[in-house]
Length: 309
Image (cartoon, rainbow, N blue to C red; front, side, top):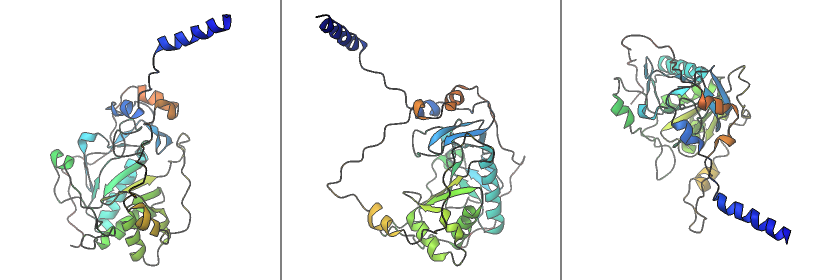
């Protein structure tokens, strides 16, 4: 009898407590932060599960780059990534005939999961760069937010549309993938295939170029964890295989429409703070501090050298 009463009491308490309240999604918490945390700069966790302390903003304009989508406020990164983007854009303009980078998302002010567009880009070491060079003029904010970059992929064949492909694309991607600080470069499988066909004898860099979904109008640079940043979780390095013999699956299976009887796609539940490294709680709650990478003062000249048409 006493056991029955005890069981009844426990059941009553559970009923009165009501349903459990779900933890808020980390993407909502980090997306609400508009300024970086005033902390020493460091990347915390993994590319797809982490945060960013002491982020630095990529200046909106530079001699060889323009930031896009300013309304998203995703121009923040680890200082090492910001420096890498500036250097690669300058080298590509000087040596490869690529006028300059149009840069998309890097990370939010404090990194962390985003509400749209990416699973990674959480620790300030990922960046998207369009496969279209920046124009000879400075774009307005409205133009940057409404930019509709050109896809290099023919939607019917899923291979590169040769009317849009330029030799400068090969030079640019070879330069980026060849940089020792670059961990991986993600592109559409059709673009990887085109690189394999045109790379020539110098092929070691192709191992870093990884096929993935989307990425038909931009490429994704992933940087290695900067030296001394022990809170940054390293990704395994790529092997020596250039991956050019492993593309059939993408065209034959992965990029094809799912069969009619395929189960509907079920998205993963959003990450919560409990899924992220503990240090991310301090980053989320830390005071705001604004930092911007150095950039030339005054009018910025735009290189006039342009890719062949």
